Image 1 (cartoon, rainbow, N blue to C red):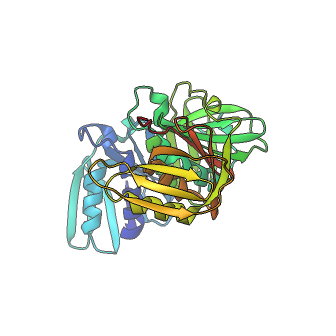
Image 2: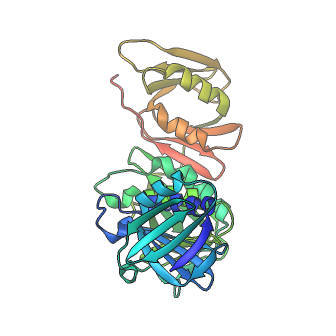
Image 3: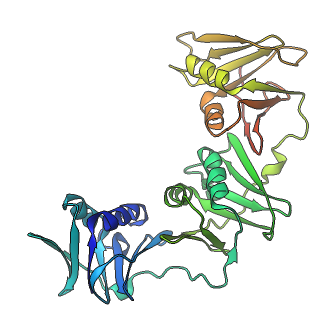
Length: 356
C-alpha cells in the first residue's frame, strides 16, 4: 500500500476517529485505525466493536493498492506535529512508513485482514427522518440520559416509532424528556441508542444522511462518513404512563426571566424552592448555611399558593434546549412530578420532597 495526501485532510479524519478506538488495551487490533487504498480511494476505519466509523478520501496521489493498520493515538500524535503539507505513506516490511520531506516515522502494523468487519447495509430498515430533525431532537433529550444505571436500557435514548409520530425519549429516573416528530412513512418500531453513540452522532453529521437500522445496529452515512453503533438490547420503561393526562395548574412563564432568576439563587447550591402565587414567583436556594432569594412579579392563573423544590439543573437543561420565548409549566401537587413544555418537547421532573 502506498499513497500521498495533505496533512489537513487526513488529520481531521484521524482526529474524528479517536472516540471509536479501544484506548484501554494498546495491544488490541481495535486500538488501531485501518487504512486501505482501493480504486483511487483511501478508506479509513476505526472501531471498538460497539461503535465504528468509516471515512473515504478521494484526493490522494502516488497510490498503490493495499491495506495497513496503525495505532490510532500514535498516528494522530505524529500528524499533529507535521507541517501543513503533503505526507507520504507506505507499507514497508510490516510497518507503516510516514514521510514528510526530511521527517520520517515507522509504526508497527497488525495484519489488516484480521481487522473487525463493519455491519452490512443490506437488509437494513430505512429510517426516513430529516437528519437535522434527528440531531435537533436527540440533542434536546441527551442531558436526561443516565450514565451508569444497572438497568442498562436507561443508559441510552429510545427512538419510539409510532403510527402517527416518532418519540425521542430519555430518563435518568429523576426526570423524563420526550421530544417528538410527525411520522410520515416509517413502520412502527423501537430502538435504544447508547449515550456515547448519541454524542458522537451529533459531532459527525450536520447535513443530510441515510439512516438505517435492524435489531442489532444503527448505521448513519453521508458522503464523508459511515457510522455504526450496536443498539442496546433491552425493554425501555413504559414512559407514557409517567406523563400526566390532567394538570390542576398550567400556565406560561418567560424563559429568559426563569433562567436569570434560577442562576441568581444557585451560585452556591443547585437545589431550589420555587413558590407560586397569583401575583408572583419566589425563587429560594435550599442551602442550609446561606440565603439566596429573588422574586418576579407576574400574573399567574392559579387560585392558591403552592411550591416545588427541585434540582435547578433539570430546569436549566430543559430551558437550554427550548426555542420559544415562553415555556409552559404544569403541576398537580407540590410533591408530585411537574411538567415543562415547549411545543414538541416536554420534560417531567421529580421534585425534592421537603419536610412540612
